[in-house]
Amino acid sequence: MNSSNGISLADVSLHRREDLHRYEAQIKGEPAATLTYQERAESIDFVHTETDERFRGQGLATRLAIFALDDAMERGKRIIPHCPFVADVVSTREEYEGKVDWPGTGA
Image 1: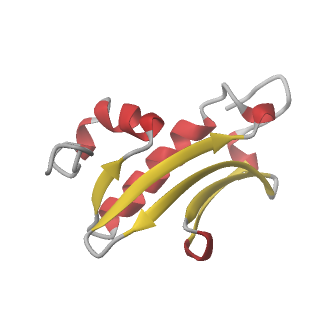
Image 2: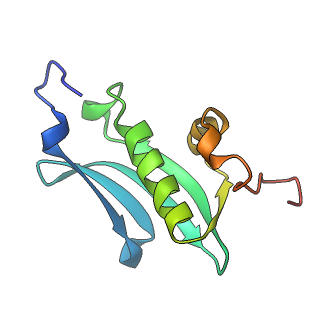
């Protein structure tokens, strides 16, 4: 992830912030993208993804979504993608097939 503003993969750190009910991507310790969620007993409902405009268009939100989705699966949680961005990521990646409860389907 190199760009004109000097961001590299080494500059990015990803975290789950249970206290704030969100996942965060930070660039050199500065918040750059967030993915909010609601945790339930057997699932995680991904609600909203937001990227600071300075860091948009560099794949940061996709990287954060994959980190969050993988974390949910590792913890044995089902995925509920209410956030349209997360729904797009889920729909293009086979590893999440069979682990998703699509909103509005009663699944």
